[in-house]
Image (tube, rainbow, N blue to C red; front, side):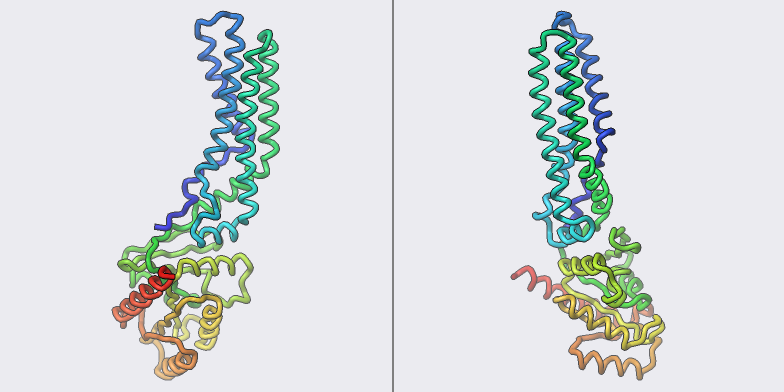
Length: 340
């Protein structure tokens, strides 16, 4: 299972929120120590020392939690590495995570230093002054990394909704809108279809499973010419290359989708140039198309060297043969990829 590694990232508290949380916890601990039977001359210093230690611990632990729950980008599967680059930028992401580490280490170090100073304080007034000084320094540190905290908070919102994929042979369906991609996905996978939010497109990604074969439909990504896309979309398409073992390209031979056969063939050729993985073509809507169009399309596909099958997703014509073909081809490609 290629589970989304960013799903467990915790909510990012901003400096004021984190300081409020730490100060409240510090005051709570102080109240507990004020109730204890301790000589009056020592109680003030003990209270201030424990306030400092608690504040340092809350701040450092919160920053560390973000670090611990965020996976190292370079150790991720290639797909997720590419998605970090597409959505937020790997270098900036790593730099900001480094700021969390720097701040956490420094706050913890200062907490120990000020706790020792307070213990050596000559009177309660000096102890209170040192505690206030420590709080000021912690606030300053958090203010310094505020931009990085804000960046990671936004990054988390984008990354936590990336889809989870099974580490199984994977087929990606491509083709223009309205050629029958979603219908085919549902017919092939039955009820096992889920819609996942995909941050780089306003639409979604559809993931279904046909036994051990995972089938992905990417509306909004692989359904129009490459020259119409922006850089983020192109990078997102390339990232799918790390998941796909086979591309199933769907052509509406009836042309009722609003695109001519020639336009659809042009998109097919563009995708072939972009992806270095096997492509299998399904000639769809054969129940609606005339024989001349089907014959013309078959001749063009043969010239280009594409293997194909004729189907009707809606009428479930030849779907059993299609299932056998994509299963065989996806398994073969998957094995070849993982044996290298």
